[in-house]
Length: 297
Image 1 (cartoon, rainbow, N blue to C red):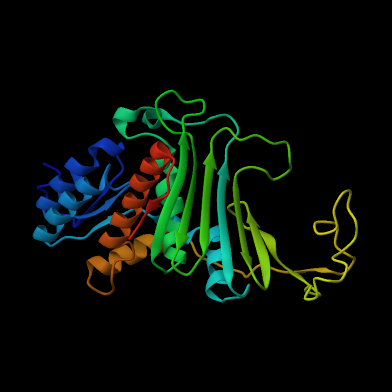
Image 2 (cartoon, one colour):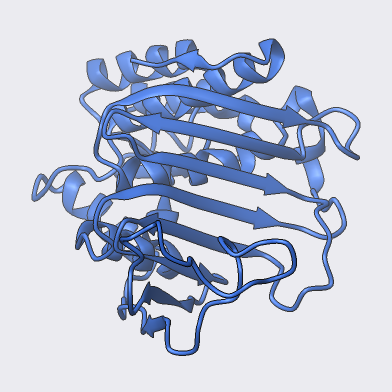
């Protein structure tokens, strides 16, 4: 009865993952635009069916990837796009929990649970939205550490054609007493400096050296135990800069959706975006099972 009501234009589907396909198709056939909670589907094949119905029904189908507007993410994305660190070669994204916490239906495989589907799709989407370059390979380790049915740890390594390596790591039971260990961390390295961003409300610095070593035949630095190459820097060698200020908020996602429904601009999270994320999740599972890197085109 709700889907046949003519008094509204769109629906938000925020049910357990296993229901997404059926409910998206039902809403699309009723002529409703759809925001579907991530993951939009349980597989690429399911998504292709859903997208076909949305196209036939002339409605928008998009995934709830509002974390494109998280301030920690937007901070590192801004520095990447400004080329402030020179040629970037590594971007690390990590999220750590302390007690294996997963909730409700997320602990059941039959419901589409697990951290790859819960947070993995967000973290992968963030990387793809930042690194606008063809992806060449996926390597992953996916584990059930303390949860019985579903994954609660993963490390995904994405290698792009521009030779940027993106490393994504999430664990619900990765412990430390180090201050600020939980929950969110970014680290990015280029040939002109590095940067770190901690916490969802971003804290961190851009870090450079005052004198880059160019003559490797000379002494590299102070002795530190058995090494000089990795010893302590001389005073004044490490220079820091403040992070750029960003002011994005999750509501921007919905503002884009509204304007897209009105035909005023293109939808932000496209069918191609959704399909690519799910394809990477499937490649990550295959890589974890085979212990092999999976080519990606």
